[in-house]
Amino acid sequence: MTAKTGDILSIENITKSFSGVKVLSDISFGIRSGEIMGLIGENGAGKSTLIKIISGIYQPDSGSLKLDGKETAIPDYITAKSLGIAIVPQEFNLINTLTVFENIFLGNEIRRRPGLLDKQKMRELSAKQLEDLKMPVRVNQLVSSLSVAEKQMVEISKALMLHARLLVMDEPTTTLTSREVETLFTLMRDLKSQGVTIIFVSHKLNEVKTICDRITVLRDGNLISVDEAASVNEEDIARKMIGRKDFAKIFPEKLPREAGTEVLDVNGLVVKGLFDGLSFSLRRGEVLGFAGLVGSGRTELAESVMGLRPVQGGTISVNGKTVHIKKPADALRYKLGYLSEDRQGKGIVQGFNLPQNVTLISLKEYLKWVLIDKKAETDKTAEYVRAFKIRAASDKMQLRFLSGGNQQKVYLSRWLDTGPEILILDEPTRGIDVNAKHEIYEFIHQLAERGISCLVISSELEEVIGLCSRVYVMREGKIAGCLEGNHINGEEIMFHATGIKGST
Image (cartoon, rainbow, N blue to C red):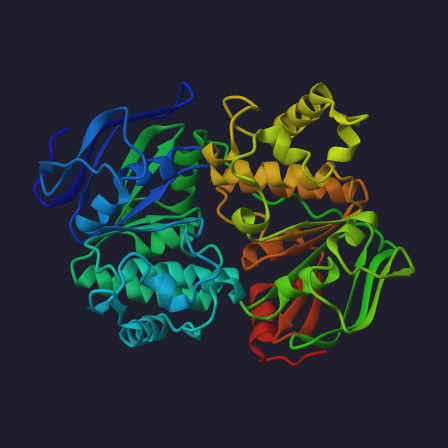
């Protein structure tokens, strides 16, 4: 294709392969100056690879990029930044031991004179940027102390501080509440009015329809379509993504079942600065939801139960017996598993291959004397690859080369390999496409059928409503309500989460 007048970026016949597997095949389309272009597709469709080529992180095997009609080489991210291209990555590129403002200006520090940083100026500009995003984060906080949603806003601030003319946003809303998403969308519209072009990557089709001018669909490394957003509906988009007409209902049917025995009972939990007498219970074979706004304490509660945070008071009972969980190894001994929301920071090991990641916790089960039974390890991994439809050229591939959705499936496989009776899933479908979500929902449903109890923490109301038979709503470190049956709906959840209805 040839560059069209008005295109800020033209992608021309881009092809890219890894380990002999083609992940992009002859991709060509243009992005108009001053538009918000949606880029969507299932996990493994090639979205992340394409935006990494645009931002200089990867180089194409063939094809070219044109900026403002001129063929342009982008050999690295430094060059991309100099050309006015910035990226908000799906997986954070933040340094935990630095403060918020130091991360925002990392590599773009303001100096008063050679050798001296103008830290006061950087603090002021960072505070203003975060204020515009309506995110109450202190600029002197260490990034290690932030929640995942707060880290997301720091990444967005970091990119915006570059004053980019082409801004790539890779799944920026996955950890944000609906209120925070609307704030972000207002900011995106303001940037668009200033002439900034935005590539918006998301699995949330309603958001893509709401904010984008046009929508580009990739499938299996191929370009499927580029449509005006107004000309397609969410079902049309989903069908293009998955390549079939019989687009199935995403959530499995909730099966009626008798109330099971309580397998986890948390009574009067006290954690300094977080909880002062919090209680809840989980039944055998139940899919229990935890909803609430960012900062309500859901993740911190899971970490406390798993021994990742010190508990000062209250009791935790497993199968009717009071237990003392002071570290994750204790939780593991009582058959508890925990899928963290921070897949990159606390989950997968990117430099390990599939079997090494799957057996990381359960490795002792694969030992023959002091040697690892590689065949048993490989055979078990192959079972999970088939069950979860994990897409990888071979089990020898390092996880860094897998899509986010396939990485998440490997991470879930690791915990299932420990034989849990209670599984805590924190944002289990973060950054996962609609088809992969359906697969994970079905698997959670099957786990419950087998008597495994699942506690699902999610920021997506649709997920909590569609998947869970009971939902606890948290607000400011307290249980604001417990909903069942027809009371599990968006209005009831938000009423409790925002304080319109009282705490229990």
